[in-house]
Image (cartoon, rainbow, N blue to C red; front, side):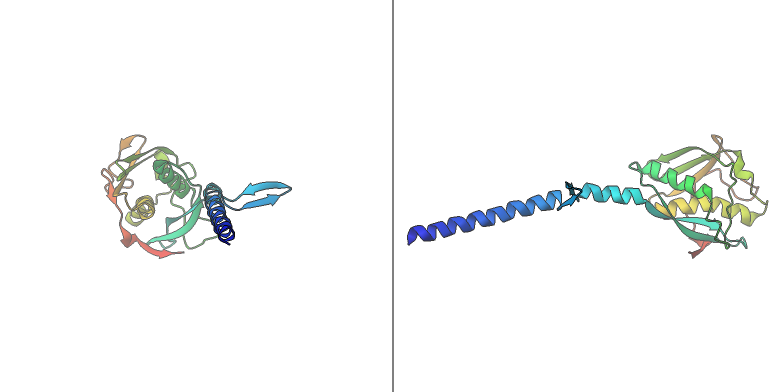
Length: 199
């Protein structure tokens, strides 16, 4: 009788141990799935690859057609491992402009605008170096100049709040202004007053 009870305890212990081992295996490796006779694992790594493939959604701010404020639109871009590269990709995507189907906003950036260099200083200050084509689409008014500048500044800081300010330079040199109204010789901080609508 005692031997029988002992066997039951041993069998139970082995069963519990086996379940624990299986549980750890599933937790760290995922459930195996069979496809075309082969075993495939659904793991944490695959989840990260899925998110990377589908990109990350950011808000991009463009001037409204009446030229009074910035409108935010959502776009997805690929995920970068490096933070500086991620911000750089956001700026490059911003310069491409909004979807042409959206009639309430316009792209203030020329198709010839080029991002020469991009710097992230101490994870708090961004320097955006562009070519002279930043002037191409400027109409000359102060509102147009302000919205062009803050399209860049607010898009960066809105999506990356740790960025305290952004400075725009042209062909590696500091510029006093774009159209004679706004001083851009120093880094500019995020200014939410220009953002009125999010689509």
